[in-house]
Length: 424
Image 1 (tube, helix red, strand yellow):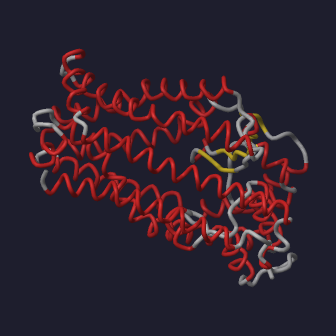
Image 2 (cartoon, rainbow, N blue to C red; image 1 turned 90 degrees about the horizontal axis):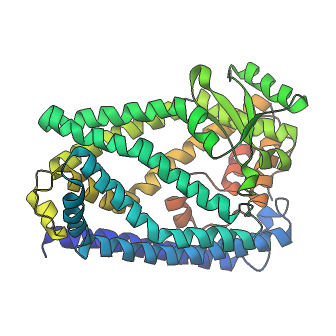
Image 3 (cartoon, rainbow, N blue to C red; image 1 turned 180 degrees about the vertical axis):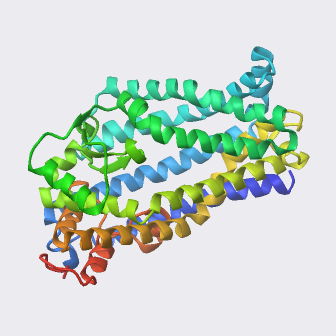
């Protein structure tokens, strides 16, 4: 048991302890505001809805703590029980040593490690979400979704893994550069193909009917220079009552997508403000910047994998002998990297929240008032039973968006028209 063993153990347990500590800190903070609706939110949520949002937050908190302990135990068993090297030998004897076989090993490990999480996911959907009125999916549809995901993984993920491993034969020590380029090209291709070929496998998309809402949103697109092929409704309500809006694709393939639940919950000016916020992300070039960051991060990750693959000490603490090749380096890096990058979450979320503030500002300036966006944010927080009082440390690690109070305060500071009272 050398330095690598204890470092890996410290990373795994350190992340788990931090997650449980943050969950308990947040729970205590929420409970401190449980008895009555804080004055700052008097105009945002009815006391009954606030009480329900607190219960929803606490229920998710309990499940999250259990899931952290459960997932940590699964990961520790996978890494230190000797299962992974045993399974590698068994799989190699069964399937051979080709790139397809080694890619199949990675795929099979991912599948096996995902199986223990199915009961937790099922409970979250059919017990917790059901209890609070969000679940609308059926048992049949839930399982079909997972089978479709597995089929897509086999059809797309397995060939991609095989090509990445084939880069070792093609490019030698520089394989990681070509593998990075390959994965980036695949991701860019998916931006075009996913909206047309993959997303319709899970949801039904229909054009937004003719009417005042369609004209309002198309007018917003013309006014802001954001041209999309069409505006579509997605039947999100067949799985959940949670709501969302987004645009997908780029260039002439770009389209605006609204959840049918969102259209049911918001007024037309509020929907226009939500879309203006999404257009703000586009106009401020947030998506290309985040894609660039993702590309750089992936580049660094592949370099680290290529370096670790040449280090004998990286393999032996987990029962491997180093002769298994790049495939084991990819596997171990994939299992451990999240425990290290977890500590960067506050910095990444600071960056993300900065972009959200910029998109909010763009929406308010485009609308010429803050009332529509403010009203949309308030309704969405109420309908989704959002936690209005998260602990700052907890939101720093887990919230990619500012809290409602933070967004309201930022909106109130803008020198644009106001037709909505400030939070008290």
